[in-house]
Amino acid sequence: MVCARTAALTELQQDFSHAYRGLTQADESPGLKYDPDLGYSTADEWLHTYAKNRPKERLLGSTRHGPHRDDFDLTLHGKSGRDFASDGQQRALVLALRLGQALWSRRRTGIDPIILADDILGGA
Image (cartoon, rainbow, N blue to C red):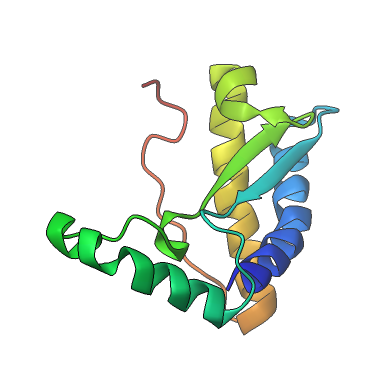
């Protein structure tokens, strides 16, 4: 799963960057950084972790590790957009991600996706 997500994010990066540059007309380097919860590449590694943690996780009623805990970061010039980018740049990064996803999805499926957006330029 980590390998598939890494490959998809690498492919999405091109569409995301294209969308960001189209929105901002800025000479900036937007990026996507994948941050897997666990960098396991085999099913056996996953199964071992799940089996080891099962008793405690049953008590908690939640799994603490796995692909559902993966995350990614939007970056500018290699730095976290959350920490480095202005509010406007952060909004542009998020909008570019959605537009990039639409381009990526259209290329993979041949279907034009519908994007629903509400208050894309509004403040927090």
